[in-house]
Image (cartoon, rainbow, N blue to C red; front, side):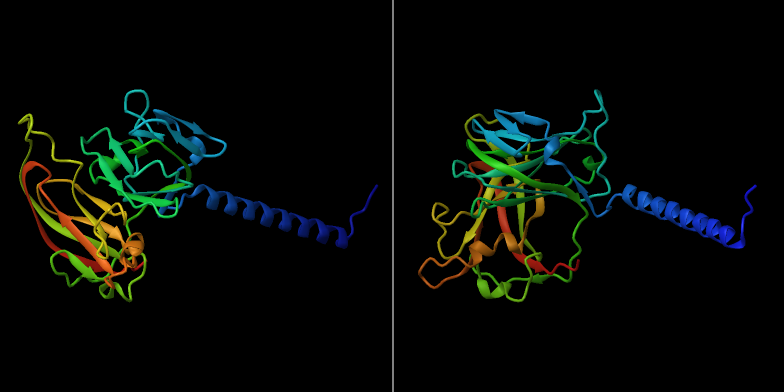
Length: 300
């Protein structure tokens, strides 16, 4: 017969307490790990499942675009085979790609939906073989996202570094930038962070009618202007950004200031630094008028 002492009882009691604390700590960690970051939802480059006119290396996260307008990205669902993805908690998709070969001139980030005919479309400059593409989610379609993909205008190779759905950035008060005939001096951007939002505001009126065929086409997703360095407006010398037409009426083309820095600071040898932006009709029965350019500092 073994008689338990007070010391043994105390030790057993302490062991039980420690065990309960450990289990509680494990439960807290498990709960914390199961709660997603509502400000961001990461897409795994290993899970790229959509490609055409090219091949994707899942081990290296490298896409080889073999033809013009090839693409790769994520297919989420079409509501028939499987439900489309609900990203209604987010406002934008941000994709960063690296090691971009010089075979391409432009990359596009597109988002398609099952509940909307609108295709979210954006492009960004390629600087030193890298770019970050940011596309706003359609407010109606974002609860049923069909697919998201990076498309190249020309054959090339690139590595998908990261991709995430995020909530919208909050901004401070708006300030109109001084401009003359589309030129904005570099001094207008002093004191603002790379996350500040620059909005190029313009108005579109009329119909998009192809001159050759006379056929009325949808207004979405055709280029109507560009933004480039004011030091040299020749885009072959200083690569710019294409303004994408979205709708008839007043609208804006928004950019992070950080994505425009390389153009603002470009020195063409004539002492002029800043931005130049323009819009045009593009051979269609459409009137496009520039309104102004504004900037707002990011608050978060």
